[in-house]
Length: 333
Image 1 (cartoon, rainbow, N blue to C red):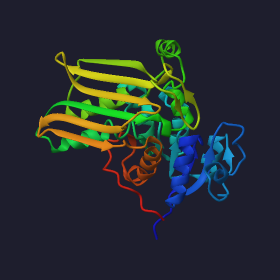
Image 2: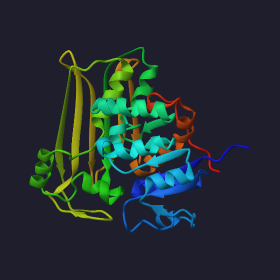
Image 3: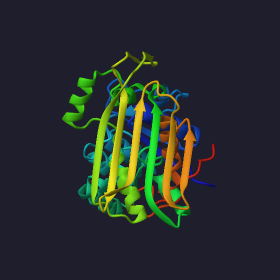
């Protein structure tokens, strides 16, 4: 008889709720839920994720629930910042549970936090657990999928990944994160203040570069507003003409003064013809387009849940999506 995998959901925001619901549907056994929001603490997790009661109460005491339930895997969905997540990651690792996290900076932490990457790897190996940062972007569209497509090339000269998203279909926190509804002046002020924009492009860039064996000489990144030309009404907000509809963010890595990897990310409300496109100049060349693009929220939940068997089977330590075997959909129970 196959052992049922025991999981905890750490963070029950919109993405965490999606992951927990899918995990339940796939037959994983949810044995705990953690969140700091007072409006969620004490409630049955099923009430928050839209299922039948699960008999799992949300708690704000990670150590207690980890010790009591002894999960195999913890889904971690609390923050984009690795430094902000460190205490949580260490708490889970010391409880000897594998971690699948959607923390964007954990997708390839050597890019910006090599010190923390080493610290996590040492702790994970000492505790006998595996730690993976994943998601749709970073984690798949603009890095893992790109790397996989280079596998049919004898030679690669340049890589370009383009993601154009219609943010109208995404949750309110995402629409706010890209600046929808701001004035151009407000947008530029937030960019100048730092910590604004899509998180994860440096991680994707570094993952690709290491996978294809390129040492980058220079990295440049830009963030510009995309303004609305006509009124746009989403489920949550209304954007008027000349207000910010979203952002256009580009990161470019160069070798020998020539750009070799370009990641072009554009997300704004009421965007037309959304798509994901990967162009590889090489032998042979590759040009792949996913019309409509991959839906970030559905895909992030799926990739986190589908990663569980691979993470459990992997040797202890900090791993990235380029390190683990190719994922496939986890069959329904």
